[in-house]
Length: 77
Image 1 (tube, one colour):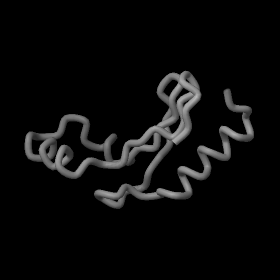
Image 2 (cartoon, helix red, strand yellow):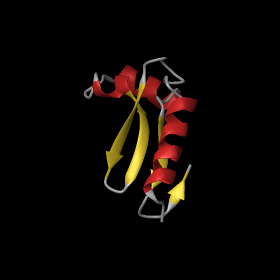
Image 3 (tube, rainbow, N blue to C red):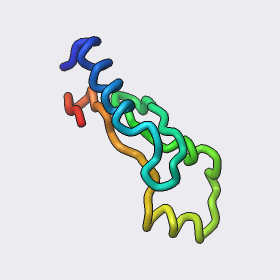
């Protein structure tokens, strides 16, 4: 288990390392999904119902989405 200071340092380091999506250059944001903190591309919120070409493009060149810390499994990226 992580204490608050360690968890915040891991999260801050991940955000500092990748402030923009590697694919499209949009800013990245941190999200909490249950016990998991994830760094994701902010452009993923803009087109939730993308067409077939956009979905193929996302498959070939995926936007940034990586687990930063998983409190449930006590794993840090």
